[in-house]
Length: 298
Image (cartoon, rainbow, N blue to C red; front, side, top):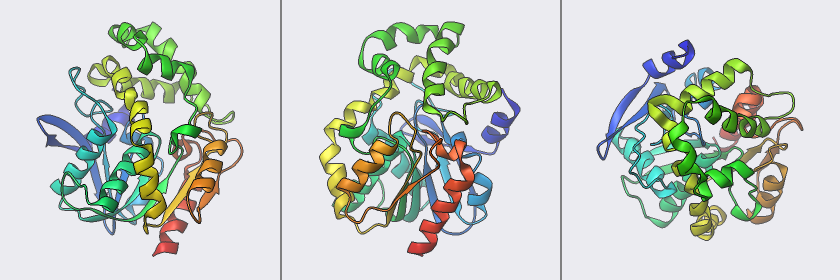
């Protein structure tokens, strides 16, 4: 394993979620901050903002089941509500009853589900209160979300089941890499070293066998859209969207929809050349606007 990924993994630990090992990291002191990563990688997505965050917060960052260093069962029904259950179970395991939340991509959908449970009293574990929420690029409104063609084919057709046995082979890498590259801005494309780490994360514990199954969360966004949006419109939890505008999935067009739907929307647009992974492409800007949001809601 790449040395940096090995250090990240070694610094974490595991808890039992209904018979499956879930990887997570906890570090720092101060108010609790839950980091909810996106698809298809893991908590290492936060590595560039991690040192600053742990200086100010007790940072809690799990890998969702099916991703990263967590269990990746093949016979499993991956869904946004189940990911939310896992996050609630981890917070209960750590005796956390309140936290700030910073979410990205699939993590936005999980965060929406967590917020809806808090608003409507529907917790599966504990009774968590969210002190603030910061959204990064993600499919907050399915009517504005524009997934890549390969993403739709892999998770919405039989192609994913056909390709998954080839995980770890050159063909699999050639299929995945163009979509990853497309999601980054023109000046922030992943280096060969970074792309290699992405592949290691995807392939850890034969992860590409289930990649297409985890990706079926797109259907949950249709099923739960109105409930999630109602929670966002009615909540008193301070929210901010920090958006990389050139992201083809959820860039400037998603930010415009957010401003249309959310009352008194707080939206920060990053530089014009930032894409889908702002915490990797522009970590200093993300930290600036995230910490300003925390300071403002104080």
